[in-house]
Image (cartoon, rainbow, N blue to C red; front, side, top):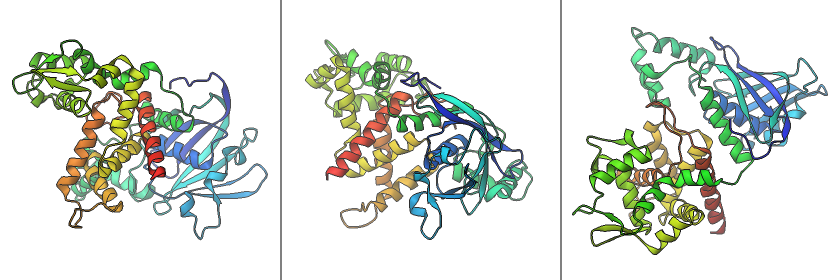
Length: 424
């Protein structure tokens, strides 16, 4: 995990966390600051095990003073429950590094009843503002799979093509996770992905300023096209597209080779290149002049001042004119920053639900049609795609994760959105 801005260390707990009754045992070893609240510790567990933060959770233990403690979260789930709020309790209230038997239970999803045994291995020191997963085994269970017994049965059925319920189980798993049966491996554990999610949490809890290198990496596609349009500009085809040589160059220099459909020398076959050109025109950073793509005065200023371009892109991405696009932009930012998103095959459904919950309807008062939802989703995806926010994808079905610069950009988008919403 990358170093934080401070070299100082903070007192931390070294914890082994195992999900009870899983076979083979699903476990993680985490090092976390003793100052984490139970609510924050809950999110760290969610990240390390790949949970999706859909349900209530609770912590049970006997604290160092010998008092039985029951803590429930989130706060709005505590009605009629005799428990403490998770946000008001820190780990050091519950665990004692000097006590060899210090431990607690963390329960997630009171319906499926996933009990995580949290064993304190000892004290540790971490760089200030870091969380780290040291080790672990086996992928986290599938959400809503029926607890340890239900998940174990699901794994058995998925592993037996002759089982009469195999097709139904494979379809259900795909619907819930977006994973095909062939790619579903209950024995896999991606330590780097777990730490990437923990890193995203740390950037939210202990914010850092964006560095010049991070800023330049995020803005690279935009700056690349602005640089090439400097001077006499970029010659276009008679239909106002980038010429094949420029398309190929964009593929090679921006790392978009995996986006090619057919020959990679036409914008129609390389959608990221086409969308980048069209967005820079829409954002008035470029304009067409006598068959060439040239800088506007605004584009010239932004090319010369990367900090100004960063601020301009925050406005362009985070403050679209249409409120529905704004809402979906916020939704994607929250998904990426949390590292928890609906599988790709359920995102349109999730977006439609969010728009309906926010009261969006057609002018005639009818629900928003599916093709409108698809258009809004596409608008936001391609707008974000004009920036390098994500780490390179390793496999086709792997979840893409934000870079540090990408996380900082989207955190600023969310903060600006909160300020705008509060001012309305």
